[in-house]
Image (cartoon, rainbow, N blue to C red; front, side):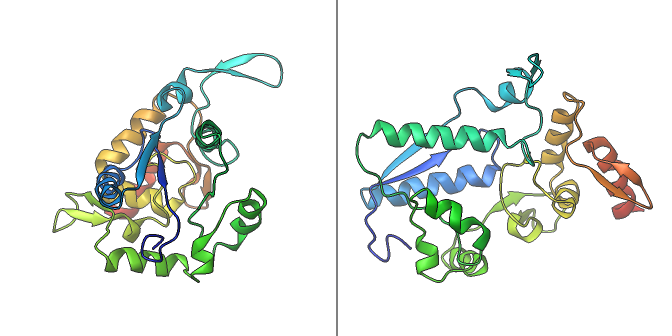
Length: 233
């Protein structure tokens, strides 16, 4: 849309956590080709240390003065991955040694995100365009951009992530809600296996759920038992 409306656009920055859905990397490669045709630079940033090192092995200082290894799951009150992303982007912008106009794709109905972004001097073009999240997704789909993932659990062998997730973030993001996690278990078993592997390396549950039928549960293995009963009986 920025290109269509002829907004000044010199560079597009992509932050690669290393833990994105495969479709994100496929879209990245399509975007790179598109940008190249318009002479727009593409920059890919990465965390200072690999995601899994930070999750499990990085020495982390505690308030008590001690240390432990790894931040564990990223999400909730411990969004360490977001902190690393913002640090990397800030470092890149400072390296340019010039004033930067920073476009961010916050939609017109994401009102809780407005004030923080504006206070940081970011430009929010989707708000100027009056584009809600649904309108943005419709625009993408109408222009041939889909978040397809391979899935042997559906007839045509692939599934659109926005049909089963509210938001497409890292596949291991602990901010995913119960329904999203259940859909990953149901439709994307290879990513669920990835979550299981991560859970096997940390004692901290990914989420905390509680209901009358199952009581309290939250680690991936408990979730799997619950989801299996709900889906398959």
